[in-house]
Length: 140
Image 1 (cartoon, rainbow, N blue to C red):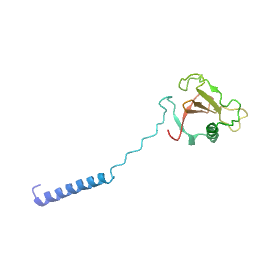
Image 2: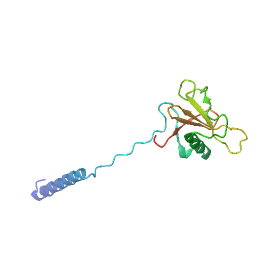
Image 3: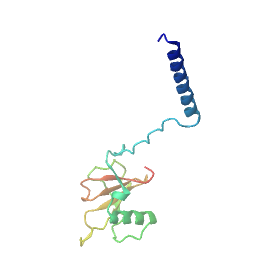
Image 4: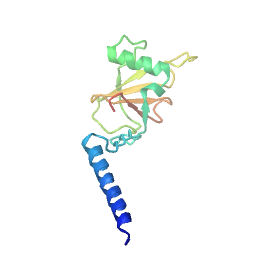
């Protein structure tokens, strides 16, 4: 670039870009940070999360009953869950409690349950403890 006019134009463009960049950073026009993705797997249990909204309506109803402290429709609701399947994280006996999730068309308690832990964690099974998913609460 030996042409003085071209040099002045390039210098003016560079200075203008620097001024625009400085103004953008001063007035909060910096690139937005991407939101942190919600984890899909619970680090402690290794189980996949399921959002409350993705649970069957009956499971959502059971969660509301648990939050209210009952009354529960089944006499076995709230009993200690022994975790004999060893799918949930190992804890002392009495740590987990189970609650029935009504299953439309079933004449007995069916296979669906919510299991709660003393640290407020909640798990859902729809196959009578053969598998579990960690329920993702609104703040998780």
